Amino acid sequence: MDEVQAKGLGLQWQMLIGFVVGLAAGLIANAAGGGDAAWVEFLTTYITGPIGQIFLRLLFMLVIPLLFSALVVGIAEMGDIQALKRVGLRTLFFTVLVSALGVVIALTYANVLKPGVGFDQALVAEQMAGARERAGAILSSQADKPTGVDAVLAIIPSNVITAMSQNDILAVMFFALIFGIGLLITNSRPAEQLQSAIEGVFHVTMRLISLIIRAAPIAVACFMFNLAAVFGWDLLIRLAIYVGVVLLALGTHMFVVYPILLRLFGGVSPIWFFRQSQEAMVMAFSTASSNATLPTALRVAEQKLHLPPRIARFVLTIGATANQNGTAIFEGVTVLFLAQIFGVDLSLGQQAVVLMICILGGIGTAGVPAGSLPVVALILGMIGVPPEGIGLVLGVDRFLDMCRTTLNVTGDLTLATLVSRGESTPGEAADDRPDLPPQPV
Image (cartoon, rainbow, N blue to C red; front, side, top):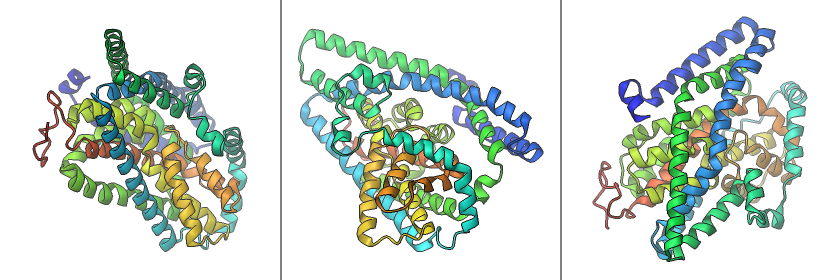
């Protein structure tokens, strides 16, 4: 892929061009025939929709082997349990800290700006009626999932093959974590050979993904065409205040919180960081999936941010599911927005509970499109708001999903940069980042 990029535009620019072309074509299609026109429905159903789905399916097909191999090898390369403990604790600390800051920002904006107060009740009824079926499907899928103690126990897979077949990311990650620790503490020739074989799986998977990613600009154009052709300008006009508050909270976290953390704890220039991370950010925005963006994020971390591979693989594979700041922010704003619409006044204590659940929800939400909606429905039921209220935000969720996924992936790269500070070892490139003091070895 590097050879291809050397001959022309970089992949991130190709994806941006695909984004603009798809968006423009979609808006033209929506203006010409409307989202319900037969020819627009034909294009989105039989041409652009399948192309985008093929791209995503090819990526998701390789996510499980990539996640498993990257996490196992990343742990095994730590060298000893103490290094793993140190990196793990730092990852946990920054994950909780940054997520908490994000939710506090979200709740503050929602309380001050009150996007749901005085909302047009006729529009509420219209939106609820139009999206009731989709909301019901989300709620029914959530009802089948374990809760409470059962949800905690479900993280430990009784059969890892079944967990992989069901795309249970948390269970697969737990198995990979335990397996990686086993390799780390086993000192034998066969164990070394097994580690080498798993690393081979990682390299093969990354190579296959690098070939698939070449089609990203076309897929991005198809995604944006589908989005714009169906919704048109309604995407931003309807529920504009709510969308604006979510974007304001996401933007504050992206351009205020992350730069401060990068400068204070990562020792790098925020401008340099964002410039190097733009390819992963564009991919995240286009696919609305942290898992689908994981391969690109891994390559960006190692080749452009020059982070130690063992740290990048460990933090980013965990972060794709457990470090979702954008998701936590979205959940916080959405819950208060819907509570305000339905006239449910939440006390500070109740908002503190919402804050904690949003942090946990950001850690446990699946890194796939619309993965946070079931968590929102769960919180709504807990605070006395009709869970069907999520139907009000479904019309703009795809756009907001793209925005919050961009923040999620950027947060993963930020987390990897923070954890990498002082963790470089001989042979790992981590000393050529701007403004980074010499690293101990």
